[in-house]
Structures are given as structure tokens and as C-alpha cells.
Image 1 (cartoon, rainbow, N blue to C red):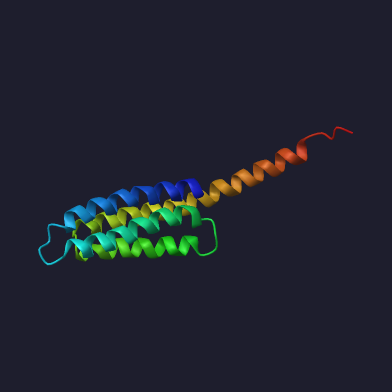
Image 2 (cartoon, rainbow, N blue to C red):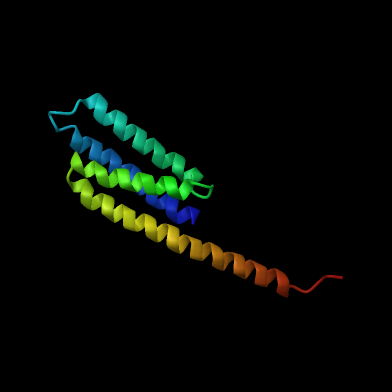
Length: 118
């Protein structure tokens, strides 16, 4: 699960950075505000890469997905991109857990089928 979720978060890191560039063109927003918000979101993406397997890591990832969709109120294309990344996040969590379960099952089968060297 960690690999799939981290890949999604790294993709989001770049999308948030590009959205910050687009948001800078809004005359109502200061560059400081845009890059403070974008920088915090980008930092969270990186931190969540390490926290995704810890308790609450997936929930924090979902909070980031909601924030990404909500950023569409500032950069309208983020409604679409946020929805795409929320779907990718769901797939990463769902299929990542299945892969982790399969790996554990195969490891258990392999360890139980190895003959003792006694």
C-alpha cells in the first residue's frame, strides 16, 4: 500500500505546485498567500508518504484529497484534478491493501511449506 499511496502523493505534490503557478495569476491573491498554502500542501504530501502506513495516515490522506478538491474554488481546474486524485487515492488504498494481504498470505504459505533442516 505504501508504494501506491506514495506514488499518488508525489503526483499530487507536482499538481499542487502547478496549481500554485496558476493561482498566482489571480489578482485577488497575494503571491505570499498562494505559496504559503501551496507550500504547506506540498509539504503535507511529502510527510504523508512516510505516514501512510501509520494509524491515521490514510485518514490524513483523505483530508488532503478533500482540500485538493476544495482548492477548485480558487483554481477551477482543481475540481477535476482533485476528483481524479481522490479516485487514485481510493484505488491506491484499496488495491494496496489487497496487495499487502496477498504478500502476507504468500509469505505465510512459503514459510509453512519449507522443510525443516533438522
